Image (cartoon, rainbow, N blue to C red; front, side, top):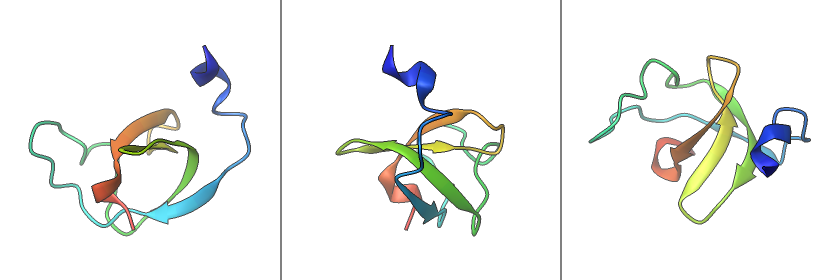
Amino acid sequence: MIHTSWTTKPTIKTVTCVSTDAKKFLVSNVLTVGKTYEVKNETEEFLFVVDNTGKVGGFYKEYFQ
């Protein structure tokens, strides 16, 4: 259960949201275009960032720059 300690884990890097146009999911209520987010974990397909709710969420890399 490594994901339970991600909020206290040091930030890997910061990324800026460039799009909230999702095909399947509603992400515009937790991400804001132009806002910078802290990356807590990263996989090949996803970035796990602290979103607007203050919790860590996993999002496709295509939403960020």
